[in-house]
Length: 111
Image (cartoon, rainbow, N blue to C red; front, side, top):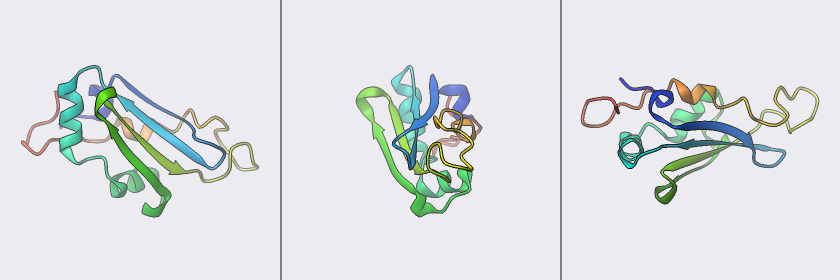
């Protein structure tokens, strides 16, 4: 079993406008990136489960081969800066991704 936080170089979150948060994950080598991409661990279902949201609140999942990374955009619970917003910048929402198991189809975890 390999955790995404153990193999990714950067996992971060930020506002993508007042109503969405973007989660970015970047790798420092192609092997790690490709193994995570092939693992099929990054899906609408997985993100919805991790963030306790509905699948339709996962707006986009995009893999960027040239950048060795992926981006996930999800709906915010509350608009940025509104009453009830816990993280106005969206900068503390990446933690659930860190413990995501990214075991590959080959049966072993990513290095």
